[in-house]
Every structure is written in C-alpha cells, then in structure tokens.
Length: 449
Length: 142
Image 1 (spheres, each protein chain N blue to C red):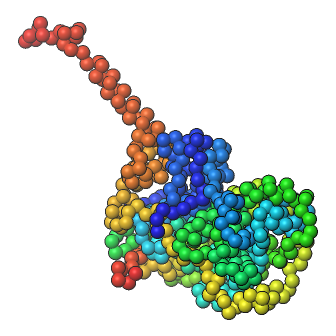
Image 2 (image 1 turned 90 degrees about the horizontal axis):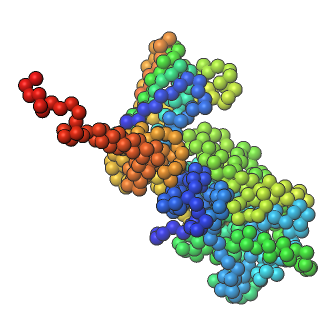
Image 3 (image 1 turned 180 degrees about the vertical axis):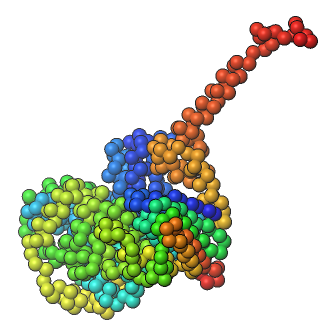
C-alpha cells in the first residue's frame, strides 16, 4: 500500500524535544530522538492530541491549499457543520456560505446536509442489522483509525455507511455534473475540515480509488477570509439546505439526537473514547444500540483545526440548532429526492476498514512471544518512574523499544547514572591499587616472617 | 510465556490493571483479535472477583502455542455454592460495591461463556482457585 500519509506533522525547528506529546499520545506513536519528536506512521490516528498539547506549536497538519481550486472546472465547498460555530451566536449560516463563494468556490454543498443523509443511512442500517450488541458510528475518522490500530475486535461493530463528508461530496458531484453537463472528474469537491484525521482519510481514500472528495482545507485557513467577508457579503445568499439536526452533528451528541436512538452512548475526547471502547471490547455494554464516539472534546467543534474554544463553539452551534425545527418528514423527503433507499449499497463506507497490527512485536508469533518475555525482564530492571526523559512515553515503552532495537538501556538517565556509579567505584578501586614500590607496608625486606 | 500479577482486595483504583497489561501483551504478540478479546474478558472478570470478594490474590496467564491458560488464586471467603455462583445474576457482592456498578452477578458466567474450559475450586473461609483455558484458533480454522 506504500507509505501511509498522515496529516499530522512535526515542524522540526520548533520542536524542543520535550516530553509533552509523547506522554499524551493515545497510541504511543511518538518518540523523541536526537532532540526531536518522531511520529510512527502506523500507530498515528491523526487525532490531533499532540497538536493541542505542544506548547511550542511544533505539531501541525498538512491540509490542502486554496490554490488547488484551479485544478477543476467547477469547485464545490463542503463546509463541515462545525464551521458555522466559529463566528458567534448570531451568525446567519447563509452568509457563511456566501463568504465561501466569495473566497473562490463556485458552489457550496453543506456537509450538514450530508449529515441528514448519513442519519437516514444510519437508521436504515440499524433497522437491517443482524449482529447484536452496540453499533459504533464511523463518522469520526480518528476513532475509526483507533479501532483499526487498538481495538480490531470492534471493527465488525462499526456502522459501514459513508460519513456526512462523503455523502455530501457524492451528491454534490452528481448534481453538478448533471446540471452543468460536465464529467464528474471535472467537478472538484473540497471539505472545509475541523480536523487532520479527515485530511488523512481523504488522501488515503483517493490513493486507493475514486473518492467523492478531492481535498480538505482547514477551517483555520479560511477562518480569517470568512470573518473579513461576513459583514460585506450581500444577498442572494446560497440557501441552507441542511436541517438543524444535521447542523447539530458538529457537536458531540448530535448524531444521537438526529437519529433519535434511545439506547445510545455518547463519548468525546480520545482518552474517554479509549475507556469506552475497552468496555465495549469486554462486552460490558450489551444493551446499548448505538455508540457515538468522537476523538475531540466537544465533537467536531473541538477539532484541532478549528479556531474557537470547543465549548464556545458548542454554544454557538447550539444557538443555531435551536433557532429552527427539523421538519418531521425530513427523511421521507430525502429518500424521495435522492432515491436513497434503493441506493444503500452506493453509500457503503470506503475505503475498507481493516485491522492495522501496529503494536505487534514480530510477524512471527513465537518470536513475538520471546520478545514479550524479554520486555518483561527489561521492564523489571527499569526504575519505573515513567519520566519520559529517554524519549519513550514510559518505562514499559522504553523496554519495548530496547527489545525492538530502537533504544538502549542507558537511554534511561537513572540507568546511566547507575552505570556511571559502578564505573566510578571501579575507578576508585583501581586508583587505590598502588605498585609495590610505593606501598608503605613493605613485606619484601622481611622474608620468612 | 508466563505473566503474573498481584491483586489487592477492594483496591478499585488499580482494578483492571492486570487485565489491561495482559491485553497489551496479547496485542504485541499478535494473537488474533477475537481470542485476545476473550482472554481479556476472562482475566478481567477473574481480577475483579478478587478485588470485589477476596483479601488478596494473583492473576496470571500462560501463553502456549495452542492455548492460553488463565489462573486466579485468592485468599478470601471462598464460594459456598459454586453451582449457584455460576448462574447469571447471582451475586454475593455487598451493597456498596453494587452501587459502584460492580457485582452484577456476571463474573463467573462470563468467564464460563468466554473460555473453552473452566474449573473453579473453593474452600469456604480460605479462598478460591480458578483455572480457565482458551484454545487458540487452528491455522486451518482461522
């Protein structure tokens, strides 16, 4: 499959080699080596936790730039619902859409509208689902990746329907290529993203086949441009197609509210998500029907590429959601409009979700067992301070790195100090040994005594 | 490979720690996800039984080429009626522990459900010993 693309990236010159990011990474994907953080591509989920915790702003996300718009005959912006949360409580979302057009897009197609469709698809899937136990939303790409890397036994529980982003891109391209009578490939669709994980998803999916979204531009990159234009844009504005509950997907709990599933569990923040997935893996929550899990605190409004504090963003988005009512016949209208019920197969999630054994010590099980035994031995000899000074997140991780040949025991400062002490004692011992010519108690002159 | 952990009765802060370490090692060894999940559940329930009911004990596993053996030995009050304890929903956990969300009477039934063999021996007033076996999927069958 080639080298995995990751949106999250280190800015070498800003990294001071501290231990913040390695300590906070939920998949232990980061090590500090030669004074710089290194990210393990297989383990990274692009959750953005390191971007948030780095005080030196040395972690960033690769996103697409607006210059890519010129590669297409017709370009459509796919704004994430969270975008509307960034401009205060009173903003008219249609003005935000107008500002996007002003920036250089030919059209907009709200991902919140895609969320309405994804809600319909989710409900339809749950109706038909045979498997018992909780079904987990696959809308958050960092959570999906986390499951691939750390909870492969839960892959079967993921709801295999397209994300709101993919639904929007697919329909937007379909509609525009028909309307303008141009091939779909000439229509570009760009997600305005709150998070790096979506950027990665778009890139990886495009590598593996045709994907209805061509790129992802960060909310923080267009924030300034939109803010500047908001007071100036004039009608007619593009009409907001999404329902309030579709817009509500932008904050955690929104999926549950939209799909109206009673027995559901909502969790946000990647460390909380891990705790809940642990419980799910152990079969601890058998009566839950639906799990909405999001890597960012607050949901997408808390994405690492948003500008506002997640809680303020949430408040703003909720003000917008509360302004109007979701039409009771929303799903029937969508189904009629897009013939969804007969096209369910077309909205299956892509690419395929497979296990990524990023923690496996060795391809060969017996060699892996030998290594695991060595790790137990090494870890018992380490101080257990979990200080991170060695560049690994804790002593056990250092032990793993040592066994894998990626570190040595004297990378541990306390181990090093111990060895120096032993060496110093040996030196002292040696220094005390003087040649017979200098010794005070001469035994040579008194032979036979 | 052999792993063994000490478990302290009533230490709910550390509860689940042994099972978490076992799961981490299984993930590193690359045992298939479903087997790892089952071992994790059995080890967790064994650990929680000690935390809830006993004074202290040990939980351990042996990973062999064709199976994983799990054992738990504790010093505790023991189980007077094992057949009853194997029934779903039967619990002798005190009220305060049930209020914490534990002691729902699923411990032993879950261990039975997720293991291929399970043996429980207990002496009232002295302690309980549990032995569970989970077979690894054969190459053809997996």
